[in-house]
Image (cartoon, rainbow, N blue to C red):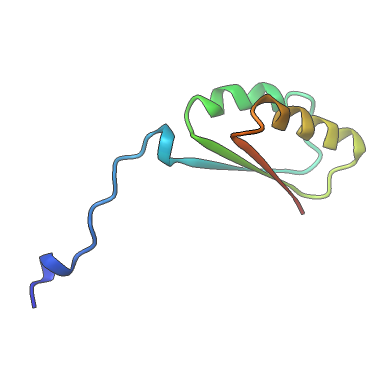
Length: 77
């Protein structure tokens, strides 16, 4: 048995196309959308997991998702 032959192929180096960020929120402030721009420049996709935010905070989350709905997914917990 050749250990090198059985080893998994090396992973590609991280880049924006193969990195995903998970942002966990609970009553996020109105600046959440402002923080998405810098994050989206570094990663290909973002998943926001919102933990039972109130009505006003959910609007802040919706505003962040609306910046790039094709790249930001929302999970409401």
